[in-house]
Structure formats: structure tokens, C-alpha cells
Image 1 (tube, rainbow, N blue to C red):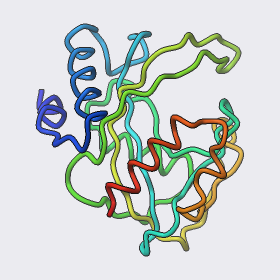
Image 2 (cartoon, one colour; image 1 turned 135 degrees about the vertical axis):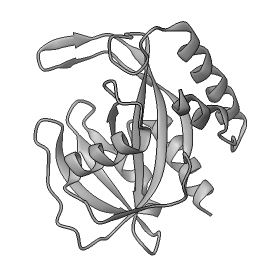
Image 3 (cartoon, rainbow, N blue to C red; image 1 turned 180 degrees about the vertical axis):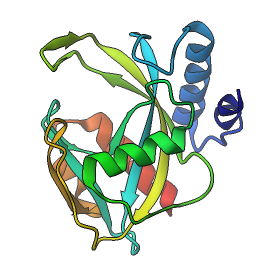
Length: 184
């Protein structure tokens, strides 16, 4: 289980990450299948926070379910390669493929609460995403593409204006603020 060492060896940035790392490791011990959605209480997800080369813009998608601008990511669905899942989700959701992963380690560990919602006509109960995130640089000249079953827009947003695009998700504003702080 090499993947578990990526989490165990992660150097926390602040108290929130310290507690979230502890919770992620407990969930991995408690639940049989955290790599798939069969674990309905908590499961692993992989994401990317994507910035341009000058670090003054962030690439975001307009998420259909939550009706807000968001970073890219998704469920691991059995794949233990966090980075592979994160990059696959980025490419699927935006069309961007000219990327550079910043650093060779996990960028952020976070426990994110997911509110109940409907997906493809089925009710999804509230649960936790045990988020493994990477910092990625992408070329702004990449052609952007909407993935209609998941998002209704893809665009580069000035990094200092993120809060204007995620007004209805203060918990995500805090997360993005932490990412920006960690980049500096």
C-alpha cells in the first residue's frame, strides 16, 4: 500500500490539515472501501488547483450540481494513483492537457463535506470527501472544453477574484485562500 505512505508522509501546513490528515487516516482504517463510492460515509477523491504560469489566474469550472465555480477533481473509483486521477479529471472536465505538476508531492489534504443532492436522477446522501489535491500549472492558451454532464462553463478567473465566483460556498473560499497562501 504505497499510496498510504503518501498520506502518512504528508507535511501538514496548518492545524486544519493536521486534524484532516488524522481524520483521513482514521477513515481509511474504519471503512473497507474508501477508494470507491461504495463507502457512502467517506471516500477518497483527487483534485487539482490549476494556476497559470504567472500565478495570477486559476482555472475553474462551473459545477452543475452546486451551481458555483469550482476546482477540478473527482472520485478515485478504485484507482490508487491519486495524481493520475487528478490529472484525468482535469483533462476530462476542461480539455486542458498541457500541464505541469508543481512539486512531486501532495499539495493539500482536506476533509470536505458534501451536501445531499441528486445525481443522474438518484439521491446522494451527505458524506465526506477525503480530498487529495495537487497544484498544477496549465498553459492559458489551451483550448477549453465544457463537460456538459458535469459543468456548464470553464474559464480562467483572476486569482484575487475567486471569492466573487464562489459566494455561496464560504467553506470553499477558505480552502482556496489556503491554497493561495501555500503557493507563496
